[in-house]
Every structure is written in C-alpha cells, then in structure tokens.
Image 1: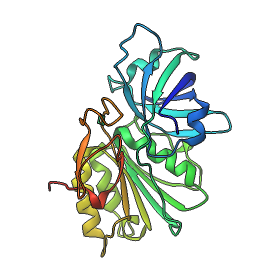
Image 2: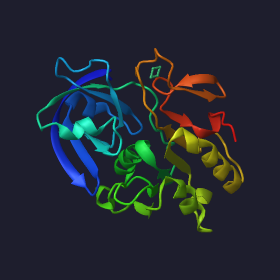
Image 3: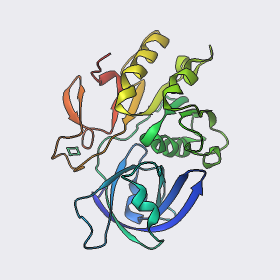
Image 4: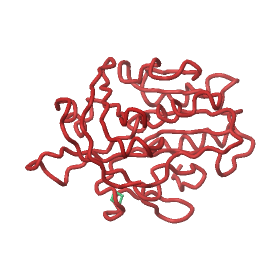
Length: 258
Ligand code: FES
C-alpha cells in the first residue's frame, strides 16, 4: 500500500458532540485495515507542511472510495478539520505498520476501548460483523462516544458514559464477562491504561497466551515514518516504534510498569 495519499473531504456529520468525517481517497479505501492510523494535513500551500494530525481510521468503503474518521472536537490537534469545507484537499500519510489480525479459528471477539484509538474498533467491528460474534465495550464522556447506529445490529454494544476510567469496571462487572470466554480480544487504549488492561486479563483468564489480546495504542506520531523515535514503546523484543512496528501490538509482548 502507498504511504502517501491525496484525499478530498466528502461529508461531515455531527453525532452529538462527535464529528464524522468521510473523505474520498480511493487508493487508501481499497487497502485500509482496522488499526491503521492516518497522518492528516491540509494540502494548501502556505500552511505549515510539517504539521500532521494523527487520526485512527474508523472505516473504509472500497465501493465508494471513501475512508472515515471520527473527530473529538475537544482535541485541539484535530479541531481544524471541522472548519474545512467539503471538497477541501488533504494529504494523508498512512504508515504501513501492524493492523489488527484475527485468527481463522476466532468465533467470539471481544472489543473494548476508549479515547482517540476507539474508532479503530468501530472499523474492526464493522468489517467483521457477520463473521464472528462480536461484543463491543466503550467508555467515555456523555455525548463523546460513537452512536450504536454506526454499527451493524449483530454487534452487542455496552457503553459506560461515566468516563474513560470506567471501561474495566464495565468489562468486569458481570460474572459472565466476555473477558472470560472470548477467543480473541481487541483493545483500543491510551498508554496510561495498558498496565491495567494486562492486570485485568491476567486475573480473569486461567491462561494467557500470545495472540489472545491485541491492543491499538493511542498517541500522536510526529513523523509517522520511523525517523524521530518519539513514539517508542517497550516490548519483549526491545523498544519499538508505534508508527512502524505498531500501532497494534500483542498486549502480551508489552513491558509495562505496574
Ligand atoms: S512517529 Fe516518528 S518514529 Fe514514530
């Protein structure tokens, strides 16, 4: 897949406080995968060519040649996108790092997330609906969570609107928590919640083997091409760059301070 793409803004929609942005980028829509991130900037000459905004893909439709993003206007790094008109040209840089990958044997898929990487789980749930039994758990603030109607009706959705920190309370509150029985788990989290996620899984599953839980890690990617090393995360295989070796990692592989 190409690293750089030219796109034009197609449509905006407002879902409570969130902005749903669809852009025409046919070459990207053909190959985009859940978990991938796009660095976005205005194509207009004169604006700072070094300023890239990091956004996780929320969906892609090869038939219409569009890719989708979900924008939280509280984030000052992304708000500029909501002021542009349809037709505005954008540059996209999409690092070819690791995206979510599911085992062929997976039948039940648990997705759980919060924050800026959460759109990656929407993409995964929409792509996999009908192939697996999917439960999607989301936590955040009232008005800032993706509306359930964006997802196919076969996806079971659980939402906490009491803030990001309540995600694992939501996940563990029932004795029937899907954490116990899911064949695979897909997480979307900020770095500050990774250790808690590992603890919860370790205390819930009798055996935790590599491949059980993949996590897409939120955070900005200043260069996006592996040069600046500002995005490193420590793993069992040494320090790795989220933009090149991630942004999706096996949670089992991460070295986390508890
Ligand atoms: S963003 Fe620069 S190395 Fe990853």
